[in-house]
Image 1 (cartoon, rainbow, N blue to C red):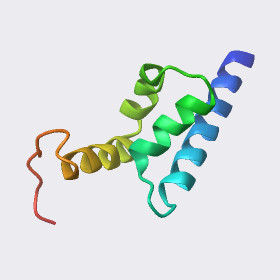
Image 2: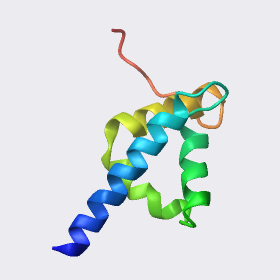
Image 3: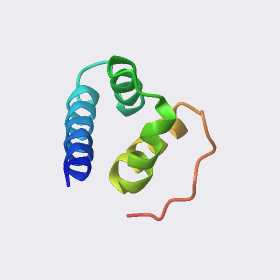
Length: 79
């Protein structure tokens, strides 16, 4: 219904915004998510479900956090 369509539009808008902003010089995915939340008056916790469900975005944010030493590094398989 209408609610599902609204959530889908918000999800698409969020993902487009985050990917576009994160690719800018001097930006990253963590900053992009925080910027989106601030500009749209959304609690950062509310975006947690979207991030957890999108493994690509979750992985990019985790890598950034590990690089910045905000969290311990996880074991990675050699590729």
